[in-house]
Image (tube, rainbow, N blue to C red; front, side):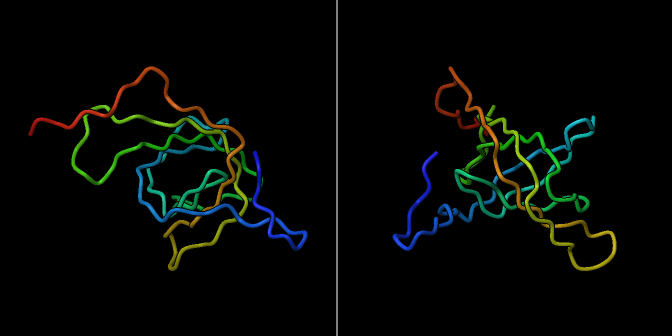
Length: 121
């Protein structure tokens, strides 16, 4: 993947999109999936709330559900991802979880799915 070059010998951070999408995640090796929501996302990673802080370098399995705000969608497409935690910031208050930043190692877009269908409600 290419990174933006600032022309000053540094790489610029990937553009982030402040969009809330449903997300499921679990630490690799764990059975239980946790539900969350993205705060922002880019081609290189995602920021989301977690049930508990996880240490940097923790490998994650994630699924981002491409549910747009234009109404309920039947069977929205999902992107499966492998990632690892790069930063964890504890939330305010005991038992409040943490905000995690994770860097994508790989992701797989659904193949063969057509445009999401609007529900008929």
